[in-house]
Image 1: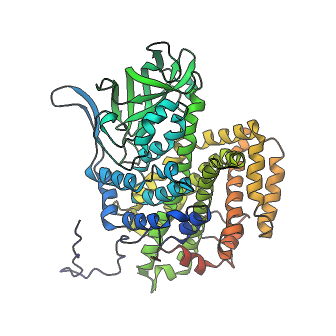
Image 2 (image 1 turned 90 degrees about the vertical axis):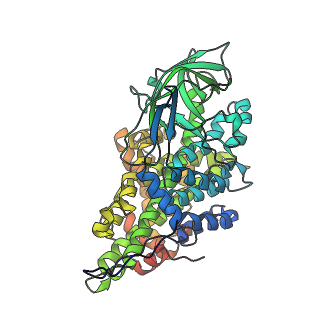
Image 3 (image 1 turned 45 degrees about the vertical axis):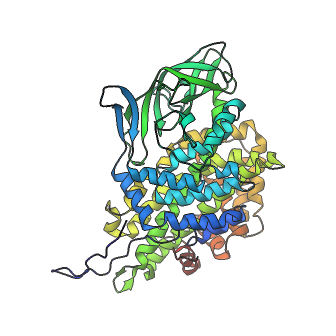
Length: 556
């Protein structure tokens, strides 16, 4: 899209002291924290691809796609013009352009196709894509995450995995046999149960003998089904042998439409580019995935991987908010100085940069644990990922909304206007805390993991203790935390424990791997009793170095 120069001389006044649009910035090369973390955790091999992708998602054209996809929300077409039921969702062309960009880059597939470091590369691609438009990351995340769950049913994996990992985006509503690339969705929750999926009432009736891989018909509903134009969905239903996992394609094997009735699209706070829906199953064709009665255990493989993306996305949105705040304040003056040079503003910006870097480091470390879980010695990494993933999902998502608000405030009134990306970011900021387990559900999962697999705690504490000796404040924090973990944890204390574990993981990573001024600022500003609002780092912290590291300056 051509961008024409605006008029800066109006009949009544000259337009001055306005920041230029934040576009044309390579989101990879301008982000030192992301580049360092990706290289450290095993994704350096993808640097050239990420460099090219970072330039594309930071371009004016792609940024405009994000705005258009949010302004022109998806529309439900229940019937065609002849009165025949079609249950299709129509998206703005910009949504499809964003999907094409991500799929052709391999964001959804690189974890399964790369020889090494695939999950780290996937996380880095998503980190960049979410800054262009986080809504499209939902179907891309589910397409990525379904692979290990499908492998519980090898014949289904053999049928679907090649198209799930293809770098071809095909938005047509037609049987998957006619496509070279497909996307996947998920439908678990119901009205009466929400996160308590064992309360689900959808029934699965076998069409023959039943069992793993066999065909069934489903009858029931799902209260939340995201990306309903996906080619197939993993879902849960009550089979004769208990709650089981099923693959539901949008088209039957005979090439007729599967009864997959979209009742309405959700009117959501944010995530406007992506459709979420309520659906009905009425004799809907499905095939069982995994063992009968073991549906939660099967689908949890998909949930665990989508939780990784629920970690990466808030880290990405933190970066987007901080980059925009630094960009705006570097180009606007007030009270005789550029905003970024004002002492109070510097205190806030430095604190936001610190938060963003800690989140990025932790997100990429969790991604490496997924790679290591498929390596030659998988058990230690599996144990770490089992506990560190929900801890990190909880902690980063709790930190995100306040950070976005502070970054919005750095813009003043301009940040509150819909022409800015900040309102969209703010509306999006609670999403990943709710999706795939809200805060309390995640905390219960942490307690469950600690109780059922004590080795998870040992693995997590081992990862934290790897940073001991690097900073006396961190060492004292770890000793207090380790003592707390030797005692039973009441359910009412779970949130505080998750918070402490999240801080300890971030501190360990920054003490070991971060620049000294970053580690010092984190230990000084996060591990003691300092102010809780952003902008209250204690005296002695190197604000200049933090801001310089976090400013989006293209370093290609």
